[in-house]
Structure formats: C-alpha cells, structure tokens
Image (tube, rainbow, N blue to C red; front, side):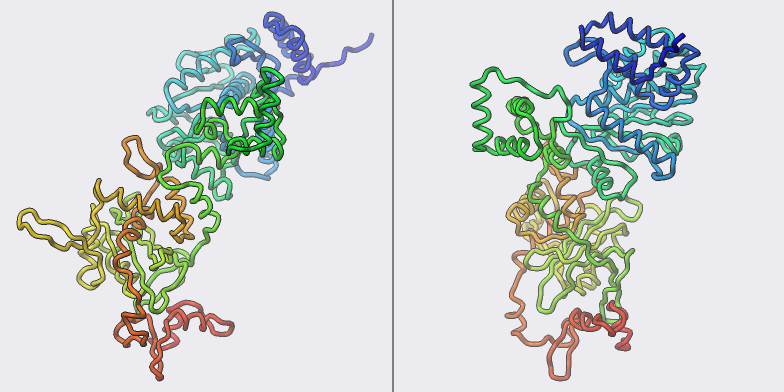
Length: 621
C-alpha cells in the first residue's frame, strides 16, 4: 500500500489559490477551507500544525476571509506589500532569537489602503487562536476606526471560521477576544482612552494611524512595563505633517532610537493599475509623459524610466492626481520625505529648508565662564552653548532670547547669536531659571560676542530675565511704546510678541529662508522651522515639540537691521583701547589681536590645550 504524501501549509495555500482562480466561488472556497481544517486538526498531521505554530500567517491564507474594496467576501491572500512586511518581521524574529538584535519595533509609513491594518489584525488573531498565553493589543486613532477594526476586520474574520478553529471563548463583545482555555486574548482600544495600557502583559502591540495620536511618547510611556521584552511593536500610519511621528522616523533612519523604519511605495499594491479607455488615449498619454511639459508629467517620466513603473500604473496615478492634486503625495507617496512634506501646512518653504538640512553640521559644545574681567569659552560636551564661529574682531553680533519657565518646564530657553550678515554663529539652548538665564548666561554671552545687542522677548518670564540683565549690561534692545495716561512715548527694554507683531517677525523669517539669506547650520533650528505650521485659526506654531529657536531667531533677525553699522568707521580702523573690549589682547606695538586668533595659534601641534580657559591659565590670568 502506497503511503499518501503529507501536505504542507504551502501546498494547501497553493491549492486554495488555484480553486479560487478557477471560479472565484466563495461557497466552494468555504468547503475547501472546512476540509483543510479537518486535515490540519487530524492527530496524524502534527507536522502541519507545527508549521502554523512557527508561521501563524499560514493560517491566514489557509482559512481566513476578508471583504475586499468591492464589498465582496474573498479569501485572505496576502498581497505584495503585506508579504514584504511579513518577511521583515520574520527575519527580525529570527535575528532576535539568535541575539543579533535586541528589539522588534517597527515604524511603518504607507499610502492609503495598502492593507497593513487588515494584515496586522489578522496576524494577531491567528496568534491568539493557535498559541497559549498570547496577548495582543491594537490602539486606533479614533473611536470610529476602533469599531471598524474590531467589527469589520477581526470579528468578521472570526465569525467565518470553521468551528474547529474557534477556541472556547469567554467573551467577544467588549472590543476584545478572550480565549479562556488558551489564556490568549486580543483587544482594540482608542488612543487617549483612560483604559489604555491596563494589562499585565502585551507581547504584540499595534498602533494604527499613530501620526494622528495626540502624543505617541505619552502613550508608549504609559504602556511601560506591560510590553514584554520580546514584544512585537508596530506603529503604522500615513503621514500627518512634520510632527512627533516624523521625529521618531528621523531618529530611526539615523539609528538614534530602537525603531526600524519601513516605507512602502504606493505602486507595491498590485491593484493600483488602470487600463486605458482606448488606443488613442494610451498614445496621447504616452506622448504627454515623454514631452514632460508639466512638473507632474516630468515626475511620471522619472517613475517610468528610473523606478520602472508600468504604463497602467502611471495612468492610475495620473487619475489619482486629477482627483487629489496637492494631497496626492500625502495619500500615495513615492518616498518617505515626500509624504511628510506634502502633509500639514508648513509656514516656511520646506523644500528650501530641506536643502539647508543637507548642510547642517554640529557646532562645538561648551559653556561660557568669566575669569576676572575676561570672558572665555570652555569646551564641554554637556554644555548648553553650541558654537559654529567664534567672535571676530570688529564684528557686530546680535542675540535673540526666548525665555521658558525654568528647569521644571518642558520648554527650553534659547539664545541664538547672529552676525550682521544673518549667519547663525552660536546658540545657547537649555533648561534654566529665567533670572539665571539673564545673569550670568546672557551677560557673559553678550560680552564674549563683542557686547552684542540682546533682544529679549518680554512676554511671560522674559521680564525676570530682563531685570537680571539690565543692571550690568547696557546694549539691550528697546522698543518704543505709547503711554496713554501720560500721552507720551517711552522706551521699554525687550521685544513684545502680540497678535500684531508675531506675523511681522515670522513673515520676515519666511522671507530670509525663501530667499536663502539666512545662514544656518543648526539641525535643531532647521527641524523646528520645518515643523512650524499654520493652524486652522491662521496662527503659527510648532506642529509638535518646541519652537524656541524659531521665535528667538525671528525676533532678532527683524530688529537687528537698524543697529548694523560699519565698525571700521566707528573705531576709525584703529586698535581698540584695552578697556573697551575684553575680547582683544594688545601688543607693545599698539596692534590688537583677538582672542580667537590667539586660540587658533595655541591649537597648532605642540601648543598644548585647545580651549580658552587653558590659554588664560598659561597666561597667568
């Protein structure tokens, strides 16, 4: 008697696909699924069950169904995008188990309706059905989406399964499946709900449309210890502007956090194709693309020639362009960068800012200290002052100041330093009490940069900073105000930001960026500019995080122009007197040499230490 060859999971899936292709008959498919499950649960077929234990996705393609975009119930066969992501998950799991990676965390950036939520939901349900002690959790961005995920995806799949695949269930009516005999469960909730994270353990977490949550950081922190060390964590979303998800994505691409960034172009979805109505329309479309007379047609030409897309894909994309226009790049992005830049309403020219970002370089970190009458810069990686260019003789400098509450506040105080050509040469940035920001920080910083003009925003805690500075520092920006009681104009120290003045400083900064007049190598500032958006009420603010570098820079870049003078004329091209500027050293012949020049000499090979403090120590000061 010939022994029958045992079927594998792949054999069963392949046969199901063949039968479906023959007639697309859901009743016939149901019969095949029932027979397949009988085969799998047969005690003699342990090898097949072992396959499914290792690869839960096999159960999806063997037995699950889904409602397609045409509202028809069809077998749940994974598409190319889902398979690509699944391959990434499986490789990561294998690497984790042999110690090649320490986490299973994925950021998924995608276009519309590529099937990620459906797949991840089905994958979690498969894990809950086949394994003991599994705990899965999905968090959606809204109540409507929470209901859709549970009712239309998870519950519909479960209800269509043959009886042998439906474990003993404790309940399935609270947005949760709890299989009591297996002690496994899967549930879904809404971001912002107070119940979020109340679980003993979570070994599979899925965040749906995470870019639309109020706070990714607070939610993930709240989940805390509920997430097991080996938990699979997925945050998937379409882009929603330059917000917290964009920060996570940037960190993932740079390797500064533990997330794996995964981007999936729209054309990986196989059904995104459109046939031409007739031969004449096809030929005209191809001529239009070849001519490339519009920016969009040039883009189609690049997709054809560089990315290798087919004409039916390009024609589908063209149809979406006619419907969506400026929203196309957000809904169906060709690159991660494109999706972020297309969404939201950035106030500044983001394309120009992306060019700035390419040229950003770290400055030298340190702090300012005072040695008697001398102000010096000391290198310190933990310092709050970042310097790109040290003060130069006969140069004017200008400092803008945005004041935060203090050390306990989430916001930062910021003091960028610009030269007369609007180049950012240094920036103080950190948490500090408002009075300590004024004295000694701003006083020392202003003195070091040739008694720079300092413009402090008076709003909120700025007055405290002004009071700490004004007794010992004279070069402070003053605004003219009108006293209605005395009917007189008066001079007040500091800049006041109001509904009238804020557009002035922001519009000016926008112009400087657009015309590429601004000189800036600070990645922190450029990223804050990228995330600075126009709200629904027309006001401008950071989409997420802070905007202190934007505000401090915008203030000083507007007010500095009337104060710019030719220092050579002021000083008559003569060396300054010893008591006029502590940044210079005077020689016996009457010439002046700036400290920065002496520092450069001291840093040459064999000259010893390379910071200001060590130079002054050698000089005996």
